[in-house]
Image (cartoon, rainbow over all chains, first blue to last red; front, side, top):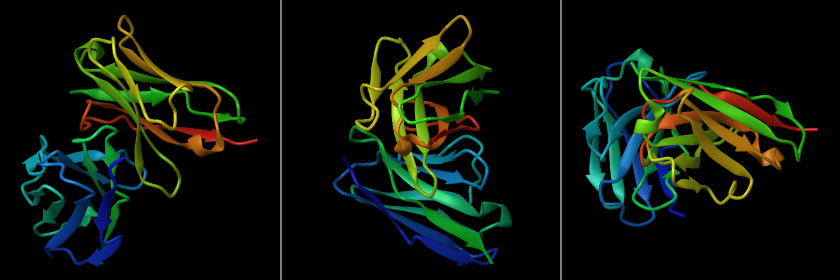
Length: 107
Length: 116
């Protein structure tokens, strides 16, 4: 199955800063990539699909980019409610697989 | 608004069985493909199973193939996950979610613990 590798594993960021999270696929997945945010005690929330399309209701400060094997989730102007774990997920190859997650802590 | 509510999670012994339910509101389950995804303690997310909108096709992760069965009751608008021959490694929070490839929305999850 496709291995998805996220980096960094964790980071601590001050509110207002720009955050860049990376996700790498084991082989090309074109743009078949989604990003999720999961806060403690909550279920995951879809942020991005198709590598760059924001899901309904997702603030414009979240943006996704990339294609092939390299992908990025950018949060422009981190807000305190943005803490949590961020997962990438590929859906180009069956079975769909997730990265191990990046934990974002707010300073 | 689409809403999903899981139930049925419990503490069960290895080798035991459990059936999880996912009640949908705000939409008709039979109009969408539905999936189960789990998160084991200290680990990431893992896709478990998918039921297509037609209800005719099911797909399973290798780790649960032959032990888990996903189904749907259209009259009750409920999705199920029948879990048999449970193992310690099945311990996880189980989420139902709408979608085949990417998932939105998700339920709040139900906890399954397999332990003696």
